[in-house]
Length: 68
Image (cartoon, rainbow, N blue to C red):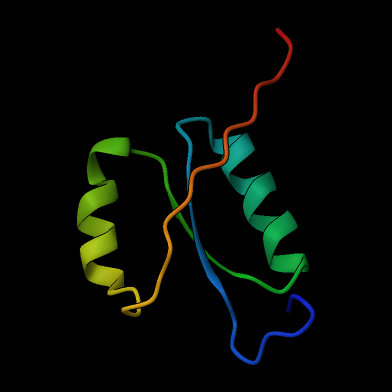
């Protein structure tokens, strides 16, 4: 769990590449986060509704690019 937090932070990871999705999930879990994954961006809004984030939740987006 990240230093200074009293509850586990939940992170939604979205990627259509299974290997990237899984490796990101494992990395974040090792860091103490609760990780939810989604391989289909069209399902993200429904997943967010189901997860019911707490009222103070702050969405953010982090994009990583990889050399081809």
